[in-house]
Image (tube, rainbow, N blue to C red; front, side, top):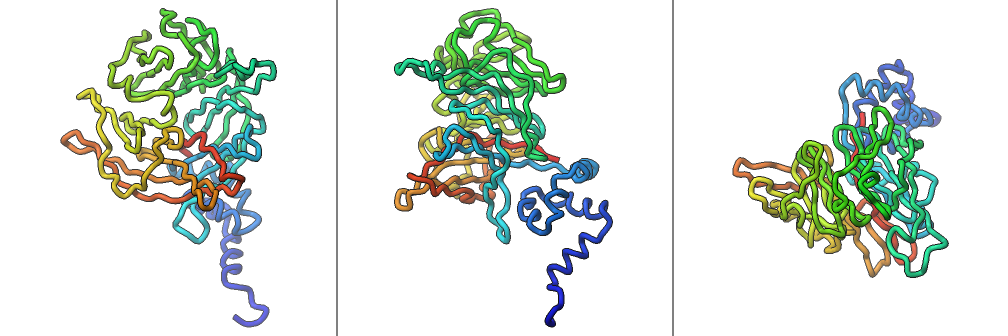
Length: 383
């Protein structure tokens, strides 16, 4: 290259941007969103192009959807704020990394319920510190319950408020079914009226779901999941799992009830209508036909996972399974976040096998004591 001559990479970039806008958008629409952080560095024009409505509409016209993994972390420097990240490719590398995105500005020391409906991520309820609480108070009594709901559009990574719940809930459990969000528990003095409320994402309205028995709504902490075309709810206080059937609640079988608990509340997911749970270093799936829990085979290449349920998160990742976990490195006094992707294969003999596709160290915390908390990990389907 002669002195004063434009570098080839700059010349190529300039020529690309000189193409007609519809052709530029057509090219960018075919690039995975995993590469967007790198593409945004190409030129000053690219960040606005990548966030544009026109690019979104082009991806819809081309029928291009993909599953994007999001993680919510709590950092020690401002422990009451939740920080959101998206999994992307590292620049000039095949490895993956968590890239920070916008986060809601409100603080919530207690964790909100989080669910995904299409491209939208909902953060529901939570609680602020109750300064007047007794020093002996525990659970929801130490917080002022919040009824607020925030939505993040995973295309633009912008947050906005949604209609608030009718009841404030500190530790709510939430799941989705047919475009409706079912929110359970999270407050004291529950009764047959306020035990559960439902949000219709199309009409943006809340309604209570009445239940016939006060026995079901004892306690304030629950788990819930959408599975087999209905909603399952587990009561921590009663150690019983209920499932909704034709508008009524009935007890689920004991194997299903024993398969999950609040100690592993974030360590389960449903992939292709199969319920998976992480427990003591193993991932097991619920064999509905035989009413048994079976180890997911084929994961010999997966690194050893923490024995603590709280440090491992499972998520449906577009028909595959995403596993996220924490690792504390004592020598370096740092906390690492790892992610792995597992392909699921169902065999004719009824067995289910997993195949490790990749695993990467996606985040390193250099804060004092290496503190970082993996709060949520979930996947949104994005055009």
